[in-house]
Image (cartoon, rainbow, N blue to C red; front, side, top):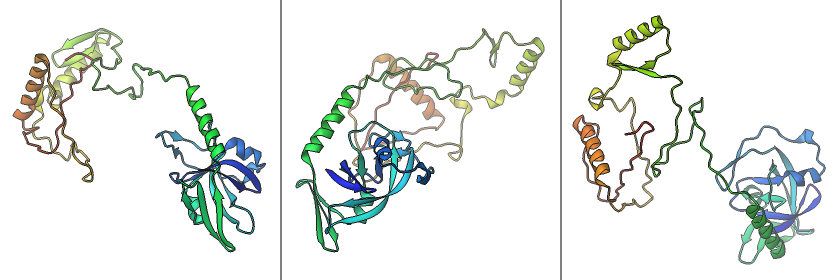
Length: 289
């Protein structure tokens, strides 16, 4: 619902009443128009989670007086506003905190907001023309945005590269060795190493051979206290049972072989789930396999 309100003694239009917002928001262009000194704003703010799930960093926050309706049935309260710098069709967003303070009751169907005052019940009616204008402005801003492109970054130094999508057959490219590799029984090492360092490195790997896991058989009896996997499923939601998928012969044989290895050493066990079922998803490794 779009209304007009009096904020810091200014008549402000295109004010969105949003019962789904937990904060009050005023946008930078409107805040600058109020002529308020920057010295009274609060710099200690936290990121704001938008409806789309994106994190928005507010510029500042400030406590402002906001009044609804006109005398004698006028109500006024002080509320904290986050100052946000982003393109929008609205000037101000009034959330649940301000509505709760004035004890407002909304009727979206009637475009009506009522609240108690000392001189009776105050009434504010929504402006349908302003609402249509804001909606049209929002559609234009969305239509003007360029399409998003997915970029793949290869070999990030901090290891925060893109995650492989299990639905894709092609794995994400990874960093490759900077030199040729030499196979030394235990592992692969660079061929450009100093001879003395190379010999020490090989001796060290051979001495510590027992710490490497070469197959599933080398990892028996790992305690769940070390690492475990848990499915956090809410009991309030109905389980979903997927329809069983058909796999080609090659994939089916690979799946059976891997499951057999895990069952043989006790990593997994066969169980029957009558209420939910999920198909296996195979992901190709970067080095094949």
